[in-house]
Length: 87
Length: 211
Image (cartoon, rainbow over all chains, first blue to last red; front, side, top):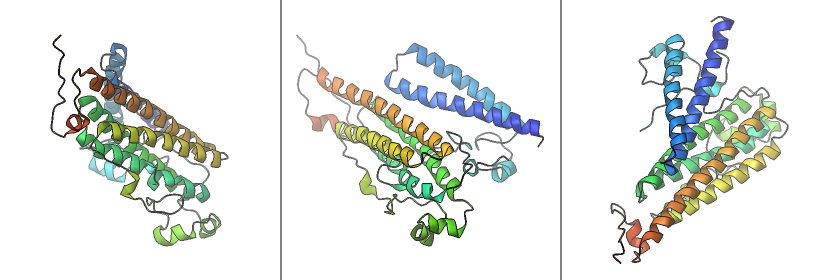
């Protein structure tokens, strides 16, 4: 993978992580504040954004979840999150 | 059910390996107030909760704790992976290394293997949520001790600060859930005893005052 592609992959994953976290945190908030419209709008926007980002990442690089129609070889052989490698 | 996302909830790249820190951080993996205790406590308690809010909160926080278990395991792994035997000896990890090598095994900093008696399920929403509130505060206190002890390793401290912050958010959500249950109990004009409120598979009876 070229350095440019590596950089793009890393940046995209960072955006996915941030978006996923925004969903986790806002959905916890919505558990106890079901009527909060601002939080609800934010949550929905982040969900839509995450889907776009994940589709893009998985098409360009490798699967993030086995529920995506994935390249099995890349699921098995790609680096695992705890390894912290630059692969 | 769960599906795995192949990324960490918070990114971890430890540049300086240090098995001395792994030796204490492991407590948040398999110690009394660690993430394994947290996830199993909430995911077990959720079955007996009386209303949809408390079921959702326990389910969703329990799920997030599994992601935190992975984060703590990753810290321990990256701090010890590939270090020399000499470094392991110097870190006081000889007993751990004897039994587990550099695998990540759920024990406390003092070397006590994880035990289910660290958690409680009382089939009583107030008792359970009070336990959960205390658990979040205890975990926060442990992260603060770890931040003190790991102060020289900025990569490690950054992750510990993130985890500490999540304990505070979880405490807040549990507190709101408990308030919600107290409010529902207070709504009843005719006193419904706690046993009936907490009986599994029974809807909460709210008896309206006809006056």
